[in-house]
Length: 75
Picture 1 (spheres, rainbow, N blue to C red):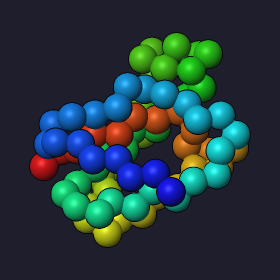
Picture 2 (tube, rainbow, N blue to C red):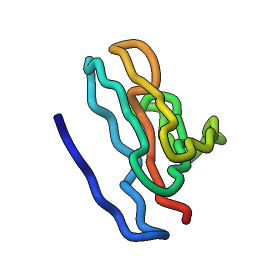
Picture 3 (cartoon, helix red, strand yellow):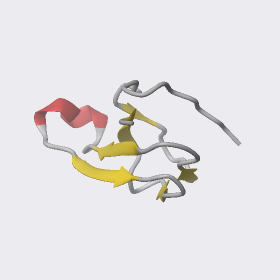
Picture 4 (tube, one colour):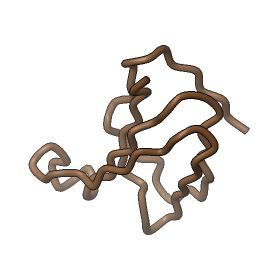
């Protein structure tokens, strides 16, 4: 398990976990999830897919999906 706690307005950099399986659940507040194409394609060149995950919201990643992403606490 990994628990990350961010104050409102804080975010992760665009990053990639590479061949990871994970489930992400929001325990408090709201998280904006931005999914990008692969890092090697210059992720900032393409508009990300955005999804708002509210408290108790769940998202996931697998080796082929959602690997390159950014999370932001938007409360």
